[in-house]
Length: 264
Image (cartoon, rainbow, N blue to C red; front, side, top):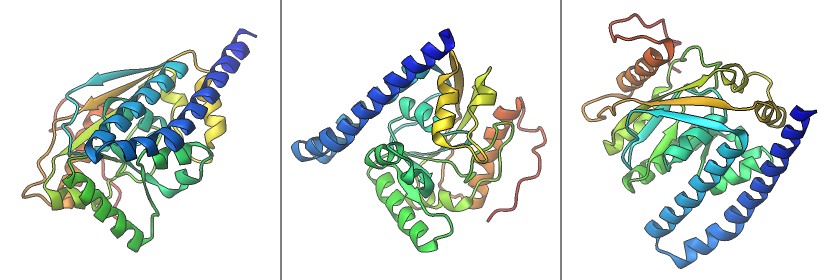
């Protein structure tokens, strides 16, 4: 009974938070864009987004353990991908635009909030659309905005790291911006509950998350890598290997890294 009451209470607060998010995205953001300059408007929107994400973390009792230094503005941030919760965790620490697969745009409420929050949706397999999104990424990086991408292209259970798609690194090379890898690790019970893979759907997964009393996620911000005099295959492999060393518990860059999937 106590568990059910806690779940219902969390669900009630989440519904109120989503309503608040719709008001911010549909009503407040447009007003901010009209009343303030582009730079000031972005600062105010980022502050509102971080406050919203912080409230979300408070409701689900998500504790973020951060190691390393957060990236400076204008960086391409790349991470392994386990769950939609990755965006919640990273977004609370770093004001940034996110790259996500187009499927998320159709999720009820979440899709709209993500779009209004500046998420760029990529239709995988559509080369023309991917080129358009790449141009958008270049423009944002030139405006000193940070972008978070998940180069695996899909989620995993968090035990390993798939090969990174090199094409996502091209905007960083064109703008010569730094590339900063981030390793995500869910701890304790969350290690088994957080992964969003296979046939999982958002609503049932959200209930699973709300049923937890609390859970922790560890974000390890690794040193940024220069994109100058680099190519997208080498930098994608390097960032993937650095993240894998953290995920696997390796303590030396000399440790062997398991074979990667062939780049697409």
